[in-house]
Image (cartoon, rainbow over all chains, first blue to last red; front, side, top):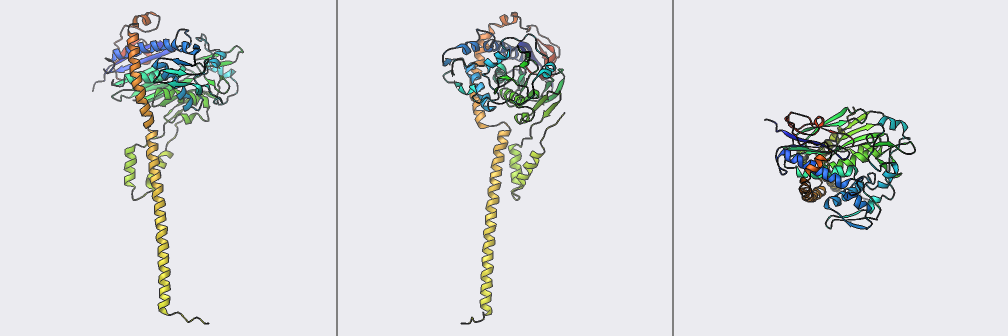
Length: 345
Length: 130
């Protein structure tokens, strides 16, 4: 069988690199047309969701003095994603910490990022982050039907990683009928396609850029969150980065410097990656039920493999075989769960 | 008043009654155990079915939500595509490192940059912190 050619578009977007890779024709046209469509759409969405452009839809929403603001369907969906992130992570992933980010020094494009090793050397004692007692994300109400967002004026949303994960998912829907695709929104990516073509997904080290691990997957959401790239030195000379501890509003140094999470969607992967990083080394694993890679601040890393999933067919087959031995099904699944674990590299 | 000694027939009847009572107790115990065992098995199986379905990413509630989102998303992305297609030249000339030229050589998405195509099926992608 001859492999179909894959159309590839790579471009600068969201202050980083994005890519669209498409195999075969589908709903969005030929592979080349589809890849070009993804590029155009992402660039347009970036303009609308930039916190640093006064005229962007997000900036206008953040400035709007009204309590209830009519917004585009995409903005409403993004606001809903902010709420979902807060709910799913128990408040650890909070997309409303714009004021705190700006106070920490992230009020514009970062010119000279601080090297990760230098930031870690200057960083305070490591401790896990925690949710804020009164998370502002709870005050956010979204009406998708009416296309409105209701929140106390002054509550601001940060595009950040949540928007990238959401965009990867939305564009992935548009490419679902193509044989294979990957949408990479600056590290948050969705891989899929009608023909379930396996693709290598490489996880890069935040220290030296080498590949730490390669997943071979045909359908998945992947997101990587870390403190290595968007780091700077605050006015007080202390190292700072864009992942804040919601309980203190300060950059979180937890002992984990980067997490890559796998999940059914890119948005979910983004939420899990951030929550795992903020939870610290002891609790990071519990966010990686679908698998992932954790990089610690001593430079070591750990590959978390997902627990083996028992399919319904296997379950039914086991149940019918063990009808005469009622405890057999139970012992089988227990031994299967006991066999799961993490591979430490 | 003295008790008259029991006859063999009476002793037989008592032994028989005792044996019957014992048999009834055994039967009750057996039924209780069977009911408890069956209940536990059914519960464990139902739990496993639900667990397997959720763990494999097939949560019905999430699927319903995803469908709803997908419907909204296609409408939104179509609208965005049509609104931006006229601005392709603008974004290309605005300094973004995109290229209209097409590379025909086999390439990996992570090393090429710009636009092109891979002749070897699905190219590798790299995820790194953004």
